[in-house]
Image 1 (cartoon, rainbow, N blue to C red):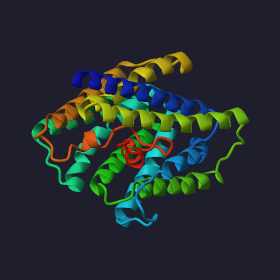
Image 2 (image 1 turned 90 degrees about the vertical axis):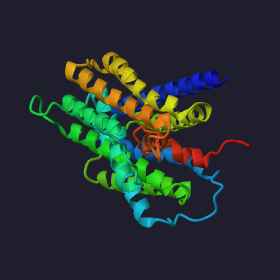
Image 3 (image 1 turned 180 degrees about the vertical axis):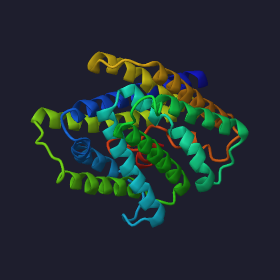
Image 4 (image 1 turned 90 degrees about the horizontal axis):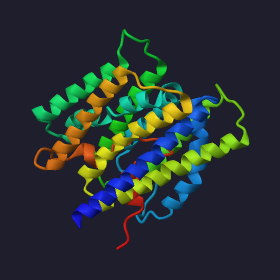
Length: 319
């Protein structure tokens, strides 16, 4: 029975990652015609009605006033940076290269969990982190290719996404999920809305519809991921995020004429291997007090694809 549920959870997670990859492909398609922050603004704006349906189910009484304003402010800033960075990176770089850099998030979660969660990291996980960060350098290959703003944006998105995951883990249930969801969304509206004054291009109706599809895909994938974590062990579900590299390779080749070069294959493989090893070490038990990587649901966060940990608290299982 346990094997069957683990297989079901893994299958649901793979489907979720396929939807996430499609979500990111549409970002790249629209990002070729419009400023990335404009795409983010309209995608998040069109996701708001869907998010409101979720918010209405919040069983926790209270207001939008945070109990931990400093941490919530930091989480909100990091969430906005993660969304802006990932949208910009997908609009500028090959899909597989962006994913390879974003997959550094579990490594950064491991590092950030030390000062924020008081996590103790042993030599095995430190070695995995060091190897993974070396893999990032292989992908970026500084000196061998010019580093673009897209590379910096992807790195910032990985760091910001890791920060949000660890902060949410630290806050636990001391904050309403509504607070953790709404403040980053409001911050995103303010930041991306202000950017429209600097660079705005009128969007055709079909393109606005695509922005709405981005919103729907992000939330649908989030709920599939919730179902996956309810069906299977977290250590089984978490590594499924790396299947996005397969979707990215296929989409990139078929839609954009992208091909994988050797440094991306080698560096991406090192990063993925390091991340899977960290998940395996945390999943063994006894090696981690907080299991920060597994608990953080390590898909890179955007406003249109909020963390499944928050969605799960807003949409609890039926008794």
